[in-house]
Length: 151
Image (cartoon, rainbow, N blue to C red; front, side, top):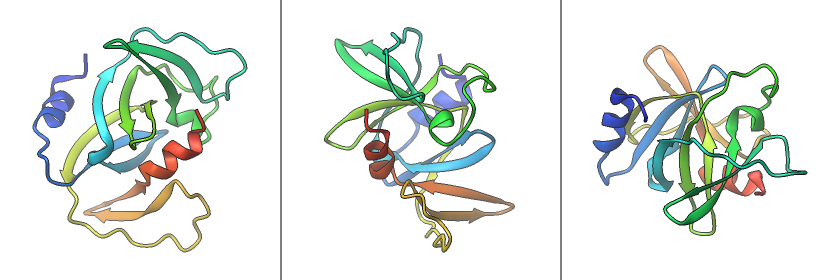
């Protein structure tokens, strides 16, 4: 079960455009909540043989089977050095649904901030940087993340 603060933040999101702020490998990231179907803790993941290292396997929920990808490994963390996490976000872009494993959910915020461009960014999964107060948040492109996962 997602901790009560995170679950409350998820339950209270409105249908207006919001961003989910979360942590991955010590970085603070954000994605548009319009593409989020669910935030949950996964318990049963069946491994897949000969899958990419970031593909943890498949999980079944509500009669459907979903691939599970670990964003921490996808963005470069060594599988052997990261602690186990079962916190996952189900993303959907109309073509596919994928659970992505993250470290922690921080909050949902209004999407009223325009990200700055990343001039040196060559990663299509990163849309830009959002600066809020004393922290920089990496804005991810859900569409590009889902297509890059190649599940």
